[in-house]
Figure 1 (cartoon, rainbow, N blue to C red):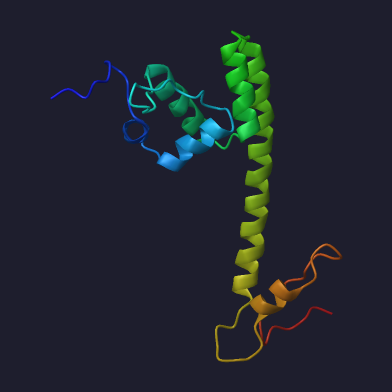
Figure 2: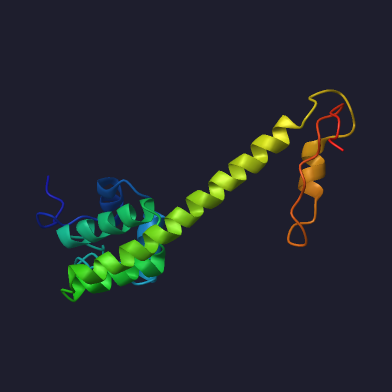
Length: 155
């Protein structure tokens, strides 16, 4: 039984399975112009070809690597125009700076959470240093880590 599709032509559901993504993801990328609208069959079904599969995989991999939609759009524009590798390198190194900043922020967050958790007495007391730390006003001052109950201050 033939489907009436040419070799390589896929419907949206087949494209989603091929690229291992959600149908709505494909619709979204079409709506925002990252994936060109495909031609339609006589029966008005969208028909995606190899170029659509490759582009979708490129976008999905870029998103896995943390590139924003705008960054992916820029990468695709460079690729579509036959732009230089140096342009891709520049955009990628800018993204790498952002990734390193996020990693530093996460490490700082890890240290704060670890020290806050370490200050907890883990008992039935109504006073909780974790709640106190979370309740501290951010932005006006750095929250101080509460001392563990029963700890002596150094004066």
